[in-house]
Length: 306
Image 1 (tube, one colour):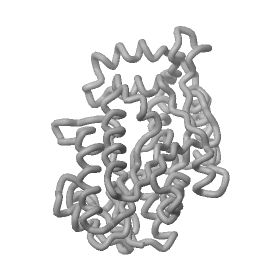
Image 2 (cartoon, rainbow, N blue to C red; image 1 turned 180 degrees about the horizontal axis):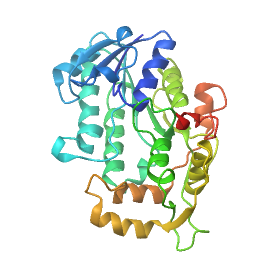
Image 3 (cartoon, rainbow, N blue to C red; image 1 turned 120 degrees about the vertical axis):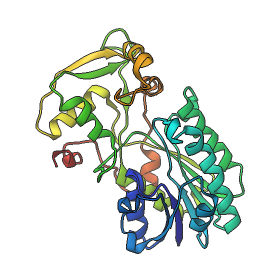
Image 4 (cartoon, helix red, strand yellow; image 1 turned 45 degrees about the vertical axis):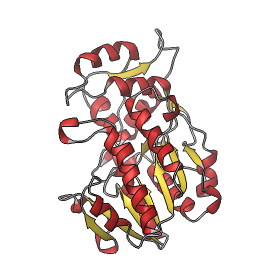
């Protein structure tokens, strides 16, 4: 099957390309100018150079494809550079869905995010609008909402690597977020899901007609607190870390003053989503990949020692 991929050079995108090739599919990818070096297995993909707002490049990517995967997303906006939630999560979905319909690529898989139903932030609101937009087309759509994704970043941004860089390696105590006034209440919890398992779920759904019209929340096998995740990241690199409990409300006050500055690690919206938690059951992932998902453990975090 020829599969058009939008967002193939990022963290998850590289694993999607690998999984598609391993399953015997032929990726057709859209790559921004100057980013070809980030593409996995370039010689085994059909490459179109262009941006997601380039109608001609989008049409060329889906030309002759049987299916399309939309894996473009932003965690933080940079409006001056044209990087906005509206463009990445809504306009890009509309443009690629229209192109897929016109090209006869009737299958469409969308990468969304866990917790978007809350619609409490512009990130969640635009992700949800993208879901609804594509669901209203005549495409055979499957939507994925993974919890926080981890795995060897292979040169890209990734959750555990950022925890190591920003909180575990520095000599200062690591911040242990909680939503209540006391650390014993309001633990921030997540179900980390391995990037290889997410990619496997996409490829499995691609040829499974029973997944059409479905939305899958993808969670890993354990619900972990923010503090426990920090401890596991530290243990994976052989360190012990002092963790200082900090109410999210206090951090949000600092973010109000500094979150528009590139050096500040989190935005107010990210803190809002963090306070909501990010957990999903593992049932859907088990159904799709047919095996036990990988845990957030010293073994699966071994890449942090590199």
